[in-house]
Every structure is written in C-alpha cells, then in structure tokens.
Length: 640
Image (cartoon, rainbow, N blue to C red; front, side, top):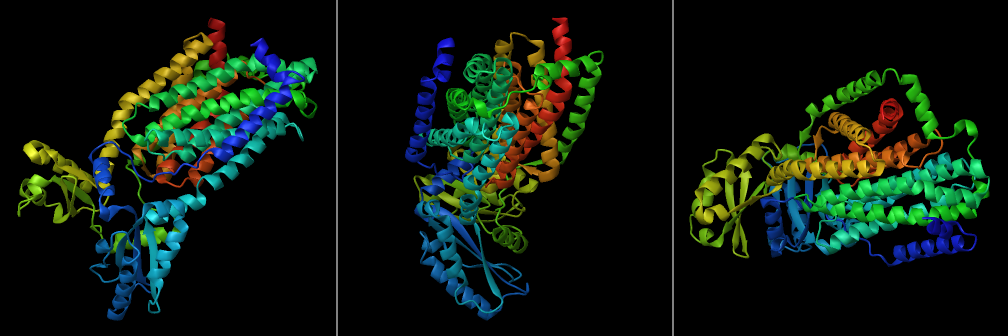
C-alpha cells in the first residue's frame, strides 16, 4: 500500500497518473458504443416466449405505433369524419412493415377510431422522434375540422425515452456532483480535483456496464439506474476522499503528505464500500428475469470502474492542487468525534433511541398496504397519455392482443382448432378467439378477454387458462399463453421467485462482507436490520405516492437500497472519516441522485426504483446513521 500511495501522490508520478486516467476515460467516451436500451419486459415465463415468437414473425417486425382519432368536442365521429380517417389509415398502411395488419377499429360509441401500425424497429431505435413526426403528420393530413389524431404505443414511449432519458438525468447528476463536492471540500477551486475524474468515470462506468450486458444477451433496460448508481457511489467515494484529505491536511499542513495519508487511511473503506455493492450486483445475476440480471452485471462493472478511477485519480489530483483545499478546523474534526459525542449523550438509553427509530420506520412502512404490485404500461408523454385515456374509455375490453395463445400446428391444423380453443371458449371471461399467423411450428390465437386490461379478473383468467391447458396434457399442454396480462402474471411469479433467491443471497453477501471488513458481528447485523427497515419505509412511501409498483423493480430496489446504504456505512466506518456533516452530504447526495431518476426515468419500473431508493437513502442518512446507529455503536463498543 505504501508503494501505491507513493505512486499516486509523488511529485513526478502524480501528474502522470492523473493524465493517464483522464486520457483513458476520454478514449473510452469516444470509442465505446452507446447501448440501445430495450423497452421489453424480458420477464421469465410464457409471456417472454410468446413475445420472442411474435418478434420473429413478419407481421411483428418492429415496434408498434398506435394512432387514435377523436373529435375535439367529444361527439361521435360522423360518416365524413370516418371516411377521412380511413384515408389516413390507408396512407399509414403504406408506411408499415406489416400493411395487412393495419386497419381502422371503431369503438362501440363511435367516438374513437384507432389503428395499430407496426414500424421498423431499427428506425425507431435510431430516431424515434422522426418516425413519430412522420406518422402523426400522415394521420392528421386531410382531416376535417374538429377531428384530432394522437400517437401512443411503443413509438411514443421511445420518443419519451430518447428525449428525457440519460442526457437530462446526466445533466442534473453533474449539478448534484458539483454541489456535493463543493460542500465536501469547501473550496472555491479545490472541488475540481475530485469532480474532474468523477463525471467521466461515472459515464464510462455506465456505458461499460450496459454494453457488457448487451454483449451477453441480457436485456439492457437499466441504463438510467446504472447511471444513478455510478454517480451516487462516485459522489460518496469522492466526498469521502476529499473530506479525509482535509482532515489529514489539518494535521500535516503538507499536501502531498496529506494525500499519502488519505490513500492509506481511506482504502479500507473504499474497498469495503465497493465490495458490498459488487456482492449485491453478483446476487442479482441469480434473478430469473433478464433485465434484473443485466442490471446486476452493469452495477458490478460500473461500481468497480468508478471505484478504481477515483482511487487512482483523486489522490493524484489532490496532491497537485492541495493549496486550493482548506483544512478542517480542529473543532469540526471527525465523524468519530461527532458520533461519539452523540453516543455519549444517548449512551444510557440507546435502546430507547433504537426503538423510536424503528417505530418511525414502521409507521412509514404501513403504506405498503396501499400498493398494487403489477408492471405499469401507461406511456409518459402528455399526448400519449391522452391517447391512452381515450382508448381505455372507448375500448373497455381492450383493442386486441390482451391474451395470445401459441398453439402447436398439429392442433391448429383442424377446423375446430381442437382443445385449446374449446378450453378458452368455456370461460365466460373470454369474449372471442381469433386465429392469427403461423410461424415456427405454432399458430397464434388472439383472445379478447371480458375483463379490463391489467385487472385482477384478467390476471385470474390467465392463471386459470394456463392451469387447464397444463392439466389437459399432450400437445395441448405445450400451448403458451402470453400478452400484457400474462406478463403481469409472469412478473409477479418472477418477483416472488427472486425474493426467495436473489434477496437472501444479496443480504447474506452484504452481511458477510461487512463482518469480514469490520471484524465484528453485532454491529453489522444491526446495520443490515436497519437497512431492511429503511427499505420497507421507502417502499411504504412509494406505495402511497405511486400506488402501482412493478414487482421486479421492487426486488431490484430492495437489493440496491440495502447495498448502497450499507456501502456508505462501511465507507464511513472504515477510515473514510472527515467533517461532521460528511456522512449526511453523502447520504443526501445518493438520495437526490435517485430522486432525479424518479423524476426523469423513461419507464415506470425505473421511476419505481428511483423513488424507493431515494426515500430509503434519505431516511438512512438523516435517521439511521445520524440518530439510531451512533448510540448503538457506542454501546457495542463499550461492551466489547
């Protein structure tokens, strides 16, 4: 360690190390490809197999645009209105990759017409805004006065993702990093030392993590989450190094010596914080669904890259620009002093403090009873949301594709389509069955369900249908049932399975790593229990705010929340100590980073993760680490 510290802080070697790291980051930003983020669910189960089958058919070669026509006054569409819309649909048919599947569907009350237009997937990924503009212009051309056309569906979601996704989130995260580092360094120029390597390191870490998942065939849906994690961890690490440096500077008054001491003193905390997050990411690789596995791999790679870059570059930068970083006044030294003081004040009653904190977290966790655990499918754009609202009102049973059965061709070859169709029709919940295309040994049957999309009745219908098909046996048992409602069933099943595998694995890994780093048992167990309670409180708040939560996102949020909070606790407890408010700055910075994710996330699942982790991190910073743990730690230390 002494040799590494000398290399990072030496008069001649420090500039070389800093320049080499920055050049490497610059080359990575230039050469690394920008990963294409998938909007697919990637959920393990029949619904994913059905979606894969549909993606290979010529009629579903790409994304879907849904055009909705209504009158501005809400009245029924007249005959001339419908004729003009039919002309627009004919023009849209010429722009579709599956023209035969594009047709106008009129609602029963004649107030809404919609058309589903499959478009080229690669074109949408390249420039969704151009595709949306072209389709919208075609749909609005030649319409009578008072008739409006709106766009929703996959294309509208892609536009929202490309317009508000990583770029907006990145800008706000950079602003957050600047503010947090300035608070940590309290210097007009010294904040540049940790910030200069932090921003490119976080972006490169996100790109590497997302690209690695795509290269291994994992669904790349966690780009924004990875960006929030890498920035949050990077800010915590950079602040820890800067604060520790200021503490050492107050003792030695020599910048290079202070940087050398910072490297040797803060390394255990940095290693512990990185190891906890890497362990949690590795546990996510055990998940049953592709998006969670991809996110876990991205977190592992991203955290390692950020930790390594900051470990190399920040001490080198501080040793070069140490005159810009003021030392900490002796009265403000050490979180240990602050924690000890607080522990001394509450030492006689640490149990009461802990019980009070648990009661507060428990009250916040009560909000989970208000949650509905199902993936949200509503688009985020204002026009898209309006179009979706018209569809939900005018087509109460949906507009097709609520449930998809893929029947073996041996059964579909007969005129009666045999058992699968008869089984579907015996349900009073199934309104009709329509035969679709055949491909790769299977034939598509589209079931129009009586139940509303996403309702509990629709979910029950899918479960019952699958069970009856399985009990029938033979070729019928090979029938797959997919579609949006089936995706809800599979998502819930995957989340339950992950709760029994991924979450225990992550918690055990985090606990073991903290025990190994701290060489104690009682305090790590207390930390882990506190972080679980903090997550439940965050979940309760998110449940009250959002009501509908993606179950797979909740599992991912649990692992990320516990790992992040435990990582910062390990980082502070193992040598990365500094100013009294340093831990608060780190915790609040992570909370704000995920708060931005909750606001600017392109998908509902991403926003779910953002809000849950943001609330959990804030509670961890202001309640657990500042109030609950210090007296407990003091009590445990005295007992030891």
